[in-house]
Length: 342
Image (cartoon, rainbow, N blue to C red; front, side, top):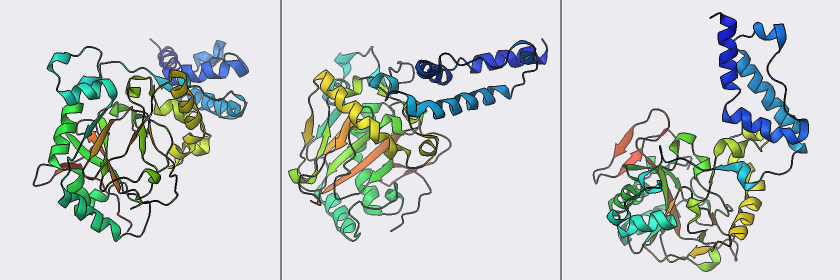
């Protein structure tokens, strides 16, 4: 088999990938089917580099035509994930008779609420430390647990980790914190699309009531059962950003201009109920990475929301190489090199 034939086969496989097929499908209403790579005698001189060149050309065409296309739909941005690499409780076939109450709630509703789970001494120590920082949105670092003991001890409270481990099906480690004392006001979204694609639901988040939550502060809201909806996927969502936005570290913020409206419409279409979490001190709400949720707008802007948010990743599903730290109490955390910037 000569080199040109091999190259053509490789190129053909690459041009049948889901990314390319979606681009072609989305572009078709504007341009019709894009032409194939090369043709006639020219195709015989194809080299392996044509794979990248064709994809780059198609992406360039997409970016030039994007302003002419209709806004994306919920179906454009989501897909149904198969069971093969999903956490056990997300699979279609589960022996529900063997599940705990928490696991059954997680499977059916996508969240678990644990009342009074965290003791006052952990909450008070964190709050005292947090008050020294005069920033409403908290530390700019996404991993203050690497630098602030009060953050780490709260995030890896062992009874909480035990619950999260049982919901996901593998040891979980803290990987991100949000330390604002005002609502994020981040509108409807699922967390899964913000992660690298291989995380695939081996992920959870927890919302701690550090004190009783003021209803005027912009409480956490969520849509029970929405973790069973089709899942927002990172590559699909980012395709509807400009090239500059797509390559920006702030790309999730840019997606809000169409995600907000799309998810509002999907909630309305399904007539799905929205719940508001008004926790009391010590309560923790744990939510699924695919649960549709938001930080609501504060009815009285600037009202303090005594909360702490922590995210957790399965130790076997963190992308790339990593090291897991363990506290003396057995709490796990992903070791990352992110400055505190206090």
